[in-house]
Image (tube, rainbow, N blue to C red; front, side, top):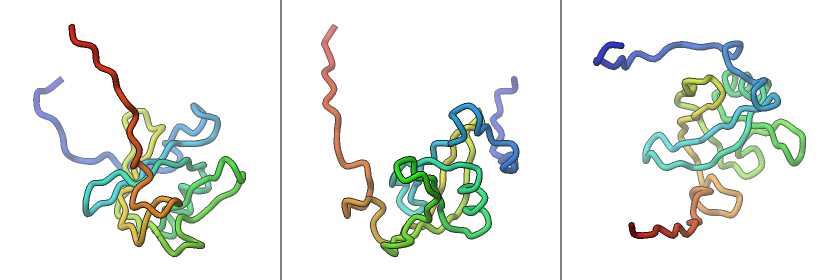
Length: 123
């Protein structure tokens, strides 16, 4: 393999995504394109990904409700898609978005506001 790394993005279609690996759902991380902050993590089925492509706004699959949902549909806190990146295994997505309002249902800007304590032992 060359020491040079390519920065050109490979273009994929929905058909290229591996929905089967995780039972028809792909994890999706939403990231604020302006700040780089990780906003939330949710899941998308094939229909949600297609709706995201068609509308330009983030759509997800609610595992608890068993239904498709558009982020911000009721709150107004929409996620406008800037780009969708696919990981190397084609089974996880990164939605780079312009977030209007807060991302978390708790009213916080991001869903990642809690910290797990890590106990590191000295060697």
